[in-house]
Each structure stands twice: as structure tokens, then as C-alpha cells.
Figure 1 (cartoon, rainbow, N blue to C red):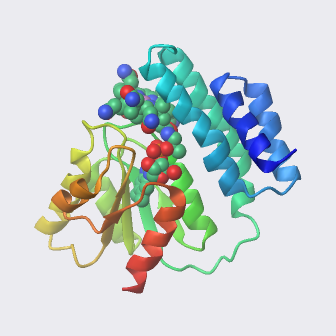
Figure 2 (figure 1 turned 120 degrees about the vertical axis):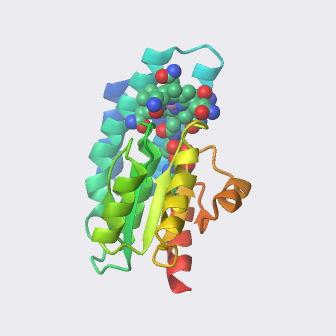
Length: 215
Ligand code: B12
């Protein structure tokens, strides 16, 4: 079976909310040593995005959206330990990452933190629905180089700006690079917040962090 075919099956398993099939495909990807980043992005994540579209179109309802997300998370739980293994453990820098307060979307942020870890960064993933003050406290405590903030809701994006505003107030802007992410984030939002950058997917996020730390 070609890789594209297996990615398509992964997408379909999520869209069909077929947990057994999705888990079977995740295990198969590990056994066949497929590129697990592609498996996650082009296979399973494509599926959860499609579920989101079906929800918007009124074809799926909230329970189906939640089930799709749960299946996606179960697949990530299987894949992530394998993505991390065997990689260089040398730390290229420290990143504190979280989804902002009021927002429980965690899938994309978890993929980004996993990728950063796999590429050799030390990552503190604080989870979802995390207050701005807590993110900053941990960044100070861990002497982070980068703070990454995810927001998937237009109503919670303002929390990304709040982090930078607090850093300005505390005169800490020179100490950390702040990067933003999440589907609604745009370049103009990054400029409005005075952030150091944003990335639309996990691969871009790794490139962004590397380039910011080279500066
Ligand atoms: C799955 C999902 C859920 C799941 C989340 C499960 C979980 N554990 O994460 C559940 C069912 C719980 C959920 C709940 C809700 N959801 Co929802 N959800 C989605 C959905 C379908 C997919 C999100 C996702 O996981 N995408 C896959 C990942 C891989 O992509 P990603 O998140 O974009 O992440 C990538 C990039 O953005 C980037 N990235 C992400 N974070 C970061 C961080 C940094 C630092 C960087 C650099 C990069 C980066 O890299 C990631 C990897 O490639 C989206 C639709 C969509 N198209 O986004 C709606 C969506 C985000 N949800 C939406 C809504 C409205 C809700 C609810 C309010 C629904 C409700 N009525 O209760 C609640 C929110 C409650 C809350 N307080 O947070 C809306 C938001 C609309 C808006 N404009 O604000 C969306 C857009 C759907 C829609 N079109 O209406 N949701």
C-alpha cells in the first residue's frame, strides 16, 4: 500500500469515527516505520480538520466532534512516544508552551510541543486553559528562551496579547521570544500583539524557533 493510500485511510478512519481502524493504522505506521510526523499531519490531523468542516456544515454535531477529537488524541498517545525515541537529547533551547486560558483545544499545541522535543528542544507543555500569569511564571522559573501560545478560538486570542502586555509591563520582553499559533492566528494579529512570529503547523514551528534562537 502506498503512503498516500495509508494517509487517506487514516483521514477516513477519523472522519468515520472508526476508533478500532484508526488505532490499527497508528500501530501499523509504527511497525512499518513510516514518517510519523507525516502520519500525524497528513493522515490523522487531516481527518480531524475534515470532522470540523462537517460540524460547521451541520452534518456532524458536538458529540461527533468530541468523539473525533478523542480518537485523534488516542492515536497521538500511541504515536508520540515513538516520535520522541531515538532522537538527539541535546537541548537546543527551552520552550514553554500552552493553550491560553479559556481555551481547551490541545491537539495542535501537543503536536507542536512533540515536534519541538523530537528536534532537540527542552519543552515544558503546560496543557490547555492555562492563565497568562502561570505561563510567564513557568517561563521565568525554567529560564525559557521561547514562550509558545496556542489559541483556537477568536474569543481567546486576546489572551495571547495579554501575555505580551504583561511581559512589557514587567520589562521582560527582551528575555523571551514569544510565538503564537492556532488556526485563527494571522500575520496581522502577530504584528498587533508585537509577538516574534507565528507558525501554521508543527514543521514551521520548529523552523521558526530555530531561526529565532539563531538571531
Ligand atoms: C477538535 C476540535 C475541538 C475539540 C478539541 C479537543 C482537544 N483536546 O483539543 C473539542 C470537541 C473539545 C472542541 C470544543 C470546542 N470547539 Co472546537 N474545534 C475543533 C476542530 C474541529 C479541530 C481543531 C484541531 O485539533 N485541529 C487539528 C490541529 C492539528 O490543528 P491546529 O489546532 O490548527 O494546530 C496546528 C496549527 O494551528 C499550529 N499550532 C497550534 N498551536 C500552536 C502553538 C504555537 C506556539 C505554534 C507556533 C503553532 C501552533 O500547529 C498545529 C499543528 O499543525 C476546530 C476546527 C478547525 N478547523 O480548527 C474546531 C474549532 C476550533 N472549535 C470551535 C468551537 C466554537 C468550539 C467550542 C466553543 C464548541 C462549543 N460550542 O462548545 C468548544 C470550545 C470550548 C473551549 N472553551 O475551548 C470553532 C472556533 C470558532 C472561532 N472562530 O472561535 C472551530 C474553528 C470550529 C468552527 N469552524 O466553528 N473543539
